[in-house]
Length: 413
Image: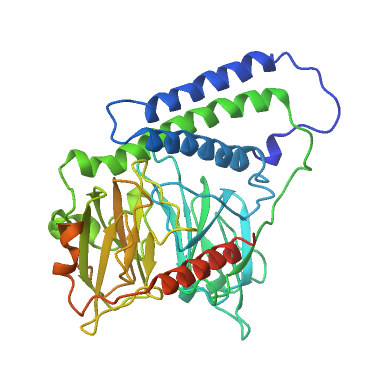
């Protein structure tokens, strides 16, 4: 909710029946439960419990964005945790703020040493229309001072007096969101960007919450929770419906193979994606091989049937270029299974028998197509030669300990 839509601190009379409005809000959220509890959808009881949790997470995120986020005049570029949305990247720190581009904003701070920093201004009505992107910057685009500091201004204009030409970005006077993606390769070693967002034309003082405005905001909030839950669920499960299971072959002529092809879906212009549905039972293993291209960043992850990442804090359900062990020929080889196969590049299903596999190729020279093979777990050793790096139980324990420590560090928890 924007501060300019809040009334002053004086007590006001209101004809709004907040009890009725609240009940209507809760009734709309019930429609979200119908999405995730639909018996026609894939998954078991645990998946459905995760679906309810996804609905609750999305509700919490929307409340934070709409009612607690400082609005367009006093934006708060807060990091979002947990951001389980749209096959979220386990290597990422996502930040978001609301913008009114008829105003002028200053974004400043330090770039840090994070592997990839992406800054995008875009619409976020995924469930209603194609996404429009108005601004795309990465860390290389920012003119940094010797210690990594930078400053950039953007909006409909004019530029603030004295602003260098290369520090102002003129944009259409639209309302949208600022999305920041910080991708970490070395979870324990990289320093995140420290960013500050300021509206230079705040016209009102923040006041108390107007009951009429609250009533006006919570209903589209509930709509967005339900619609986005259905949208991302259907987006991921479309691979299953098209029969794209345990294979990336459909990507050979798929537009998602190239960077920028998913911009209308909110994808980064710097990034190419490869994606498919996996189906692996407890007595099976899925072998994945791919030649890694030259790129700024790459990663692979598993997601559940609701198109959200698995528990990557406590399980190795994702790997990136720093964490993975490549074979001498430069290829990445991994085993997807329910049980630890003793292979360094194990992708843990966390007990989920199906969901999405996603590759990200960031600023890559090519976008290779991974090769997959489903094999019986009992015969897995027959398929693993010396190109597959082994790991001991003690080494696995230490890897997972460091993994959790790195996740806690990123989110300051």
